[in-house]
Length: 417
Ligand SMILES: *Cc1c(COP(=O)(O)O)cnc(C)c1O
Image (cartoon, rainbow, N blue to C red):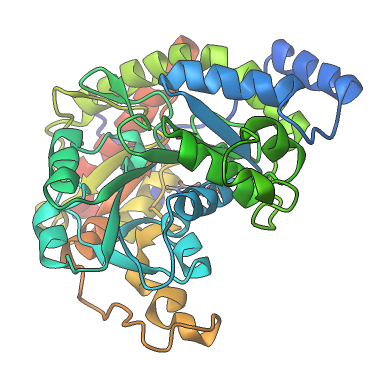
């Protein structure tokens, strides 16, 4: 054990390597070539050809689904998924109270009502709370595989089936994760994924919808991929074909350069996820038993993608030291990438969810959440730390240095009280 005094109190920091210590996505020569090649090939693709078709085919094969449609962002993918699923005015869609806001915000643009559902102590959707919030207007429930740890899909599939709800997924943290050997994003009627910068699969900016349902696929096309794609992919005899030219009026296409980047990254995804799982297991083994630090429980059926490693901070075991003071001490040790979850938080704290009518017409009657409505989500959020999960063998010493820095602060916590 390190007996030097804490860096925050004038001791030697555990890590002296200057930051940043984590960058994503890793850019390889093949990524540069793919983007440079795409610059010459096409920088605008109005139909399903070239790199757009290549990326969609590769994503569909990877997930084992029939159809994928790329979009400009994950938020747009969620919007298209909900629109295509027929979610409309007054419909209620259950989303976990603890997620990134875009899991739910597109519902406000369809006149639908997000119904926030509390999570359990592991951050997973609490189906008992969901059952209490069911109404005749409940249409769908959304699985979010928070931080890349798959939801218990046995439980969520059974819950959706039992209540005749559509099961949808927001896989934005969980590209390549699986539950019982089946990839997240292939359980629901449809799934939406972000391909944003730091996500496990990155286009820089982008997203996609995945589904086996051809009707839903046509409607995703109509929502944000008007004209050429709709004309060539929706059969001429289909009743929706006559809307092809305008679709539903939005344009949400991915940029071909972004598609090229994601397409170049995809073949390396499984290798980087295997690396992340090895590093995460190593960090958890090092931190398991450190007083006041609780490592995530990974069910035997779950294979996480570890978008980030969530740790729980147990204030009582650390003499009541506030979590922010702990993080300050860890940062002083040089473990500067340790962070508190920011934008992924209890949705009820956002003014938009409390009073959507201030910005959006049609929500005068929407009953926003009140403080204290989601006690577990609030507690989990207030007691979570997150760590980057490196994937390369070369980064193992850095991962070890991070767990050593956390261990050092936890074992010197008396000095901070
Ligand atoms: C990132 C993210 C989104 C939104 O994706 P963008 O590509 O940033 O629009 C939605 N849901 C979750 C859970 C996310 O992490």
